[in-house]
Length: 304
Image (cartoon, rainbow, N blue to C red; front, top):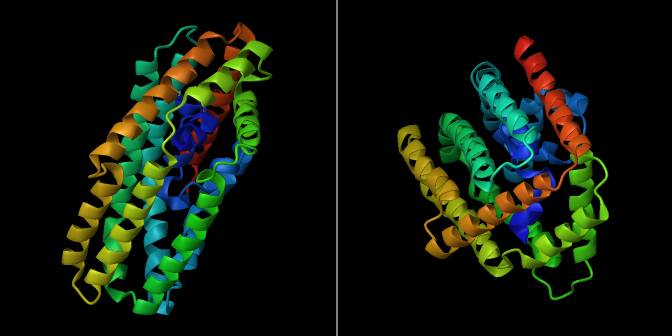
């Protein structure tokens, strides 16, 4: 269920998590997922370096020198992203519009667009590695403790929501998903709402396995950063590159199988919903994507 909670609310490739993640990507680390309008997206993208600095500082509590380095590099990263990545996002949106206009897209077509969005996220992380490699060796034990405490705070919240036998929260989750879908399709009919409930009931459910992967990633980060203290930037970048690969391509085979199944189920669920969409609902979806495409073109034309 965590996968459907993450992917389906974003309407899979229709909304293109890449609209959010590849537009702002690691610059915002998902901070835009809750924004509904193009104007909000544009405003937040233009303020991405400052927002990302604020987010990172909340984790590591930078000293003055670290803060200045991160601010400068985030501004450079934002310029690179605007020049190099936004044209790719524009192409993704164009492909998504073409797909959304079809009455019967396949799950494979949807997953293919999603896979491309993940590739853009990986490219952004790779571009960020020199900054991380410059700062990582300077982190103090107290800063790593701050990071660990923040992780545990986030984990506690996650456990309360997902690692529970109480099913009272499931209707609220489904309602949130429905609201996201209706932002793009318009009002869902009763049959579509019933199918959404069936999809959630039949989804791969292994919250424990997913949580184990979260913990693995966090421990890998903390242990790697601890080992990198007072090393050189080249050594740090090599280690962080391995860390990044492990994030996108988990070494846990059981988790990879679960993830692949969950993603495939999500693509099929989106394809099934779209096949049931009326002509007006498909038109609504295309219109929404066109709005985001216009936003991307406006951002590409701006000089930061």
